Every structure is written in C-alpha cells, then in structure tokens.
Length: 325
Length: 194
Image (cartoon, rainbow over all chains, first blue to last red; front, side, top):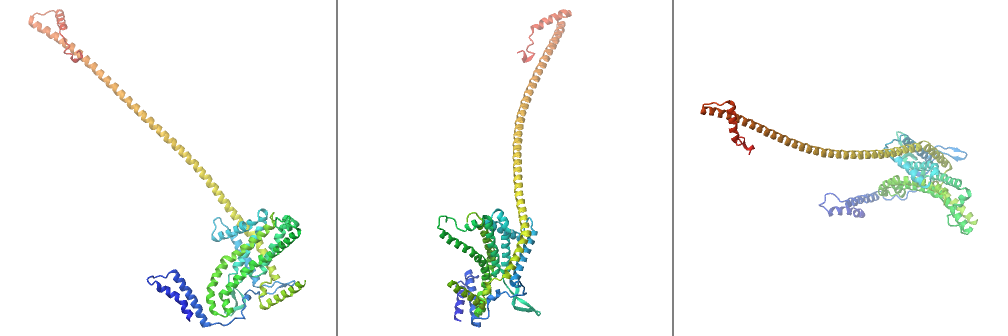
C-alpha cells in the first residue's frame, strides 16, 4: 500500500506545482500515465497475489505441430498440420496477390501497385542486381525475388490471428472452433532450412559451373596465400569449408530464430509471462509492451528478415561465381 | 575416438531430455514438412516467374519507355518552341527596323513635300506679284495715254474757244503733240518712274 502511494505521488505533486496552468504539461501527462500504469499493476498484485510458478503451461507448445490429417508416404510423415496450412496460405497469398496486381498494372499506379513496384524493384535491382550481373542476374532473379516475396508473405501472415489452435477450442452455437492464434511457417526450422539448402546447393552448383570444380574449390582460399606453406593453406581451406557449412545454419537459424523469438515475445508480453509465473499483475505491465513488439515485428522484423535472407542468397551466388573470391 | 564416444551419447541424452521437456521439436526439422515447403515454394516461384514478374517488368518497361519518350518529346517541343521564339524575335526586330525605316522615310518625304510646297507657294506668289505689277504698269500706261488724249482734245477745245478759230485737225494735233511732249507726265504715273 505504501509503494502505491509513493507511485501515485509524482503525478499529484506535478499537478500542484503549477495550479495556474489549465492544461498539463507533456511531462506531467507522461508521469501520470506511468503512475497509473504502475499503480494498476501493484493493485492487481495486491488483489491476486502470486499463484506460484505454473508448471502446466508450456509456451513452446504454441509452436507444436499437431497432425490434423495424418499422411505417410514411403516412411515420411507428410501429415497436414498448422505449418503446412500456413505454407499453403503463404503460397496462395503470394501467388494471388502478385498475379492479381501484375495483371492489373496500369500506367498511373495506385498505392498498392506502387508498393509492389517498389518491392519488385528492391528484389530486382537492389537484392539481385547488387550481387549478380548480366545473364546470371536474369537467371537467378525469379528465385531470389520469389524467396523475398514468399518469406515476406509468410512472415506477415504469421501476425494475423487465425483459428488454428486445435489444442484449445471455443464453442459458437455448439460448433467447436479452434482458438485464434498467431503462428508463422518461418518459425519452424524445417522451412528456412530447406530454403537454405536450396540456396546452398544452388550457389555451389553455379560456382562449379562458372569456374569448374577444382578452380571453384580453390577459389575458396582467400587471395594472398600464394606463398603459404601447403599445411597452412590446408588449414585455411578447412576453415573455409567449415564456414560454408556454417552458412547452412546461420542463414536458416537467422530467419527461424528471429520469427520464433518475435512470436514468443508477443506470447509472453500478451499474457504468457503472467500465466507462466502465476503473477496476474505482471500481465498489466507487459500487455502494452505486446503492442509495441507487435508493431516492431510487423513493421520491421518481418520485412527485414525476408530482405536479409534473399540478399544473402544473392550474395552467396554472386560470391561463388565472381572472378575473385 | 574416445572423445567422440563420449560426445555422441551426451548429445543423444540432451536430445532425449529436450524431448521430455517438450522443446526439442522446435529445432528438429521434419522431412515431410521440408518437402511440403520445397514443393509449395517451387510452385510459387514458378507462377511468379511465369506470370507475375514478367507482367510487372513489362509494365515497368512500358512506363519507363513512356517517360523517356515524353522527355524526348518535351525536349523536342522545347527546341521547336525555342526556334519559333528566335524566329519571332528576328521577325519582330526586322519589323521594328522596317517601321523605323518607314518612319524615317515618311519624315523625310514629309519634309521634302513641305519644302516643295513652300517653294511652290513662294514661286506662285512671286508670279502673282509680278503679274500684278505688269497689269498695274499696263493700266498705268493706258491711263496715261488716255489722259494725254483727253488733255489734247480739251486743249484743242479750249484753244478754239480762245481763238475762235479752228485750226485744221492736222495742225491742232501737231501743236498739241508738241505741247504735251514738253509737259512732264511722270508725276501722274506714280512712283514707278521715280
């Protein structure tokens, strides 16, 4: 109770400081806002107290893939689950949006067309054109452009609440409907990993095709080692080989971990942390942060990660084919 | 080798432990899902590269062409209008020059006409004056002759009265003529004779 009055005090003090002023200064408003914010949290803490750590709640289960329709072919699990649904949605959305806009391209563009044109120009001239030139750019642009748009739509779709949580359902007129939840296909390691594998194999194939197998592997060695002892060269070559394999992890995990972390943050800020720790009052503190993180994720991370993934893909292909390492 | 023998079971144990706590599925990629991803991504890429990208490129190229064409057209028109402007300026200058020329000539001809008119007027006046003088002279001479005639006649008449004798016309005339030639009539003909 004591701390509650202390928190409330700055607001009151500021108000009494300038009684002649009708409107409150921005500083006073901010202080009052924070005062109310913390006071509310403390009030809730006093009312609901601490229920102790919640062992039953596992936030990671939000990302667990429950098979909705089990399909198994040649020993491989092709079950339709949440991730497969999101893949379908992302692909359908990418194809539908892009072809719809592409077919309605006009001389004087509206805002949506302008946005798509900017994105197209970004993938074509900045991402692809920045690393690849001439015939190679023409050849690889569809792949890199598709990577960007597909990952972008997939990331953005991940912030749209959809009724996909079959673990928890709610009932409307006797109909059991899965809870609305947010999930992203790219928050599953399998998806970035397979894209990374395609990029990884592509750039090696392209490198070997451009330079020949042996010169290509030789080109992994950085320039300036001509006079080095073969053992030293071999050691550096091994490091380079490792670095190429590390790309498999870095490229895939960057995308996966960013999206997963973003979703976990939203989950925790949106109430998960309060449930997990059993402190209801914490929810009042973290809930506004969920909005801030949501805007951050939608406005920046979703696009940035799509950009980084496609840019690095272009850089890898460009690096494998360029004359000097 | 011994180290490897130690690490592998440890990793397996870690994975197992992870499975128990329910978190390892986050980092264990499913092959089925990977194949789904590959198939769906390739379909998306195929459609984008066959339908969406060429159409967008076409529209962008078309616009770029239209822009460059309109820039060219604008450049052309600017050049044309510059030329036109220069031509008009030249014509205007020419017209102004002509106008000035015309003005100069008009002024000159006006001056000439004025001078000519003045000269003609003067000549005419002089002519008139001269004619008037001639007329006056002739009239004067006629008047003098007439006066002389009348004086002669009157003299004859007077002499007849005085002498009661008439002389023959021949004599009289000769006498009068003689007398009159002695009289100075110059005072009657005015200033001309003076």
